[in-house]
Length: 215
Length: 249
Image (cartoon, rainbow over all chains, first blue to last red; front, top):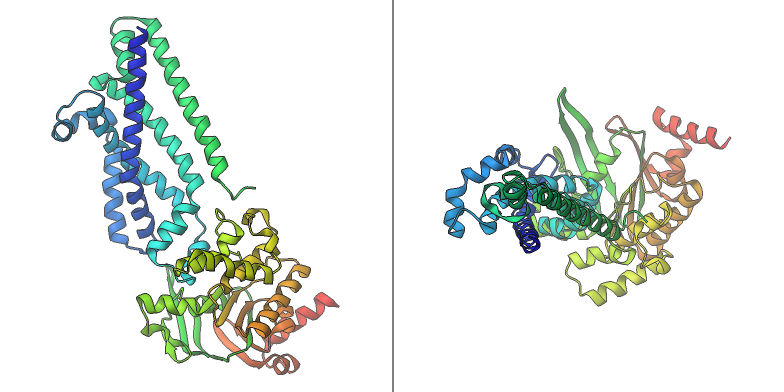
């Protein structure tokens, strides 16, 4: 039983870590695009912003469990199978990337427009404004967004477990629900609570430490 | 050095076009400390945004040493921007970078080697009297100190012109005085031409050799500070002067 729980915890952490990394690789550029093309952005483009915003809205409105089943042919194409933790990651990434894009967009929106004006006046190129002004100035807010994403992905990964993704969610469903094993169910819940708390506290501390604007 | 000809700027609003500036003509000479004064909403900030290339004129032209802004794009526009420093009312410092990094920032954008940039930034911080704050973050400074850092930053690329948008409006009168003294020093010692947008007549009186009075999107009066204030022609100038007298009377 202990081995099973260790394996499940490992699988959950693996799914969350892998999908968080890839969700950010896709979500950060997408969030930057949303931000810079928005009204008043450095490369304002209403039609692109509108169209891209819609793609993201559609991806975000699909319930995760439906999305996972829906894209399983695509998952099979990429990882060779549609079940297991790695396969679950594909769906987790597709679900989380647009979510990350919106979080990044809102973090970037918090930056004072005057700071971007100042950078323009210094002769910054758009690339420099994005990489050296917008993203660095938004770091504390981006870190807080990262904790939201990670914790949301823990929830999603548990759902992924329910349809063969592995991890603690899988154990909770198979043992706790199908076999009426309340003890195992409670243990998995406690483990999930601990993981969520540790992540939240760690990221809160990190966000505070990196933020130089409040001391 | 700066020529503004028939500058008109209109913004599109839901209720129709709004004219922020109407047929503004102005000539700023090298070495001037040029004050542009007016009430809130008169169009002075729009004028400064046009001068700093943040806004493009709807009609008319602005040129620096005979080079028309509108003829420039891409890299040339960036070069033009490096010839001008801009100081804002809200400082607009990078909050996640130290004071030193803020002053080095324009240089590092321009590709100046780190050591050289650091040396130049330290020089400037010394000039504004904040060399001991180099490692602090803007959030740890007072308003006056932040504005000094912003001035040092604006000077880092050795601009010929310093454009100041209400540089002292967020500061108390004592701090205002010291910031104005700093600007005056920069003008006399570094020979930087200064343009100051303000609504406070005391600022103009303190350091400007020339002044233009702006009201409802138009220039109503322009000339040497002494002459304009000794014999104000427009109602708005009289009003601004009168208000000042009351404040001190």
